[in-house]
Length: 122
Image (cartoon, rainbow, N blue to C red; front, top):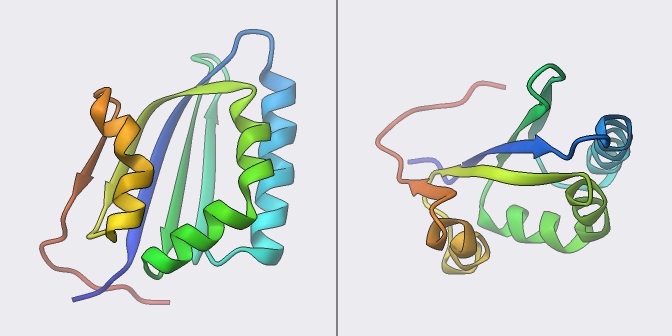
């Protein structure tokens, strides 16, 4: 069984903040690509509905925690221009990662779905 974790984050972009959101995401992705441990990050934007989706794949929970620590300033920069509507975690996160997403689960915006089976090819 793989330890990989897949995060899907649905965000509502704050009215009037589309350009700022877009630039903050571009800066964050550039930083992550150069320094952070994610295996994959993809961000999609629906300008008409003012929503965005970020999908991130991690090797394991340690990589999630490392990303949160090293990218906190970038996460806050993006968060200044949106609100999280949904945070989905697919996999079996550690207690520390589960605690990090617990506020989203507690208020109904998030969930953790444990794995059944699967594989990855890179």
